[in-house]
Length: 263
Image 1 (cartoon, rainbow, N blue to C red):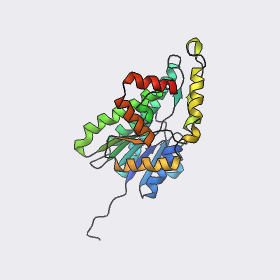
Image 2: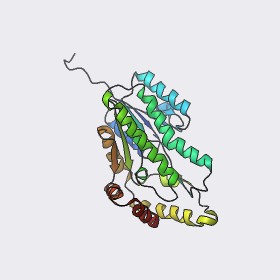
Image 3: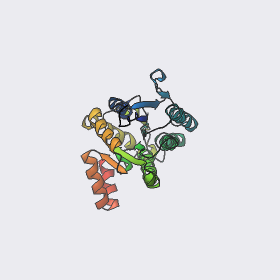
Image 4: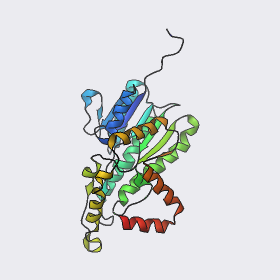
């Protein structure tokens, strides 16, 4: 036997594993030699992943416990599952707002909370948030709010866990070429107050698909942030770092008024 103890395999849990960023992260972790258990509603359980809807909190706890009990630990958890919602905030059905919150915030938080029960010093908990957590957009208020909540949860956990050797980060990517835009739930009805603005705003943002970051390059940057997990916040994309800088130096009203004109 070698005098140097053999390093144990890293056990990684990734939600949203069947598409987009989550799928790419699973591949990158596996290529690095980690044992990855993906979770998603349509996950292939024959491949060792677990089919679970992150909005079902009891199912999330059972799924994470299954992983923790199977391997005796969880080294890294990446809460990546999420979705979008657009429309006039005043007119959105409350059930859609609640579902958006459950998908992007509550489900992510419960995934991490459940994993922490199997995590020791050296563990990493990562939330995949969004640049929209940093600055709001008109007719995206619910989505932005759900992602801002993710950031606040990550920052709180960062402070609570830092003295116990567990790192926590929120990673905020900007627009990436995935199926996110196509799968976003959209409400175009603006009623008498907003008229055609919700639809026009959605089309303007969707029309920038060709300007978005490529999936694989963006995923590699996100993966590097996940592996480092040394800062409470990582912003992916120079443009979004610059916008975040402007947000801090410009008067809030000016920043919001300019954003409203653009979107």
